[in-house]
Image (tube, rainbow, N blue to C red; front, side, top):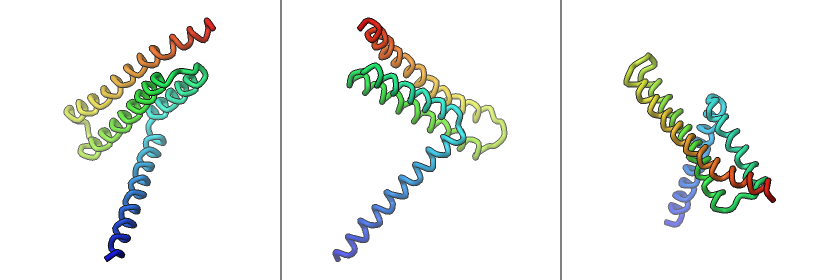
Length: 132
């Protein structure tokens, strides 16, 4: 009876490891094929370096981390929507265009909000650094 329990644990671990492999594969695909994803990663890297150099506080790090995560997740979801739309209908269709435009719009909204948050964090931090 105990052997079945071990088999279940091993099976669960294998499934968990496979899920990480699939997720990593999706991230790699997005990085390799999506220019905007790479641009967002570059912007995130610059923001992190700026945060370290300007010694932003814990609350600011939290906001920055949430913004970076939201932008990257939304870009991943946008790519997924585009791929499934292209699979369903590889030809132009006005409804597919609307779906893709809405997914891209979601990325734009999050990116603009993140830019505003970055300005709210970094402008005072830069001014404080200059005045110190």
